Amino acid sequence: MALTVRPGPDAARYLIAGRGDPVAFPFNLRWLLPTVCGTDLRRWWAVWFASWPVLASGAAVWAYQTGLGWWQAVAVAALLVALPGVLQPRSTWPVGVDLPAMAVAIWSAAAFTAGWWWAGVLFAVLAVTIKEHTPVWIALWSWTVWPLAVLVVVPLVWLWRRPCIDEVTAMPLLRRVHDHPVRSAWEHHIKHGYRNAWVMVAPWGVGLAALLAPSPQLVVTVLVAYAALIVATDTVRVYQPIAGPVVCLTAVGVIPVQWLLLAVVVHVVWWRDPVTG
Image: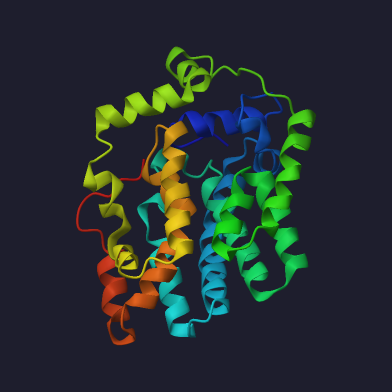
């Protein structure tokens, strides 16, 4: 089935992996979805659509396990799925890994938070096969170091699926980003404004209320999320999948319950074109 939209460079590399060809780092580590979905757009769309209810339900269960009431937990889920960085750019629809990785990882965090470590490990192992960073996300969300043990899977996958400069990464601009990620990221953010509030702050929406009660978990998670921009030319699609759950959880804990519905409505409806890149 042919793609109805032109895939972005990340999606193109997942499709190359889906047809069984080697790809560049870190795409070589993200083997599960290309293996399952191949180049069949119908399978990718099925995963994309299924990821939304999985993410929302997992976020609600995770928030409830942290001690919030069910209405507050539902509000956390609503704020999270409405973040533009969770939606991701259209060039990643449906061939992308961030949304499915978040959906599985949040269930791992919910399990670890509830004390169901065996389920947490199983979900974490599944998540790391989708995106190699997810054990770090899970550790931040569940606020425990145990998920980091799952990172042992990453070097094993590296030995199994060696990286190779694929036809997309071989393009001059992308090859430069691949070879010099820190320099490329710095140049990109300087050019497009690393102090641009519309890109770096405003996409959080009502989540900015979290700053009224900055816990150690929130501070560390947000610092890790923005530190990821050191090696990435993208912005919102990088920092929000990492910090989104903790930001939304903290914000809901600050907002009075009687104001939650209004806060969710204001947050879900974007007041300007959202930045998703």
